Amino acid sequence: NAGVTQTPKFRVLKTGQSMTLLCAQDMNHEYMYWYRQDPGMGLRLIHYSVGEGTTAKGEVPDGYNVSRLKKQNFLLGLESAAPSQTSVYFCASSQPSGGNKNIQYFGAGTRLSVL
Amino acid sequence: AQTVTQSQPEMSVQEAETVTLSCTYDTSESDYYLFWYKQPPSRQMILVIRQEAYKQQNATENRFSVNFQKAAKSFSLKISDSQLGDAAMYFCAYRSAYSGNTPLVFGKGTRLSVIA
Image (cartoon, rainbow over all chains, first blue to last red; front, side, top):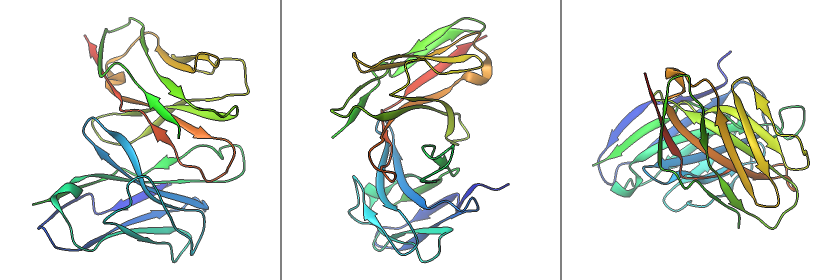
């Protein structure tokens, strides 16, 4: 019972490099989210998706792009990494209906360092 | 926009004692959900307890309970019989009930230490 799986768990980039973070969920959830966590800031929403083929901006979307080509996957891309994007990234998913519709289930996070 | 405030950056409690973590929020909505998440050193975000605003009764999950004061916009978490495994960051979060896809709004967290 995997739940929400994020890859990779750790990554170090140089400024200007690009990378993609992958989030996969096996719970058939409609909604998926990308957050970043910085010291003393809590979690802040980057982008989210309410279904396959849809994406929307969150609180801090600049410098990131996302895609939801398959229902179970939500990709977060950094086209040109900057030191300000050093953070821990969390993916989450939730379901719009049912007994647990208001609960977001989180992955284990990806620690990204941009040098 | 909704905001969530956790005024205690750090708290400590003796093992087996009780501790209360504070959370206040600001919203103009009447229907919403409130959550407490635990984040141990493993980084995994674990749901501890949730409360639906339209329910008067405070939620309880084993040793964890909340004191939900809707008029005061307060949502505190009480941990009874504290255990070493309770040591973690605790985040309070808010979610509007008016749309199924609204994301969580998090507070900045409270780091709880448990002293043996």
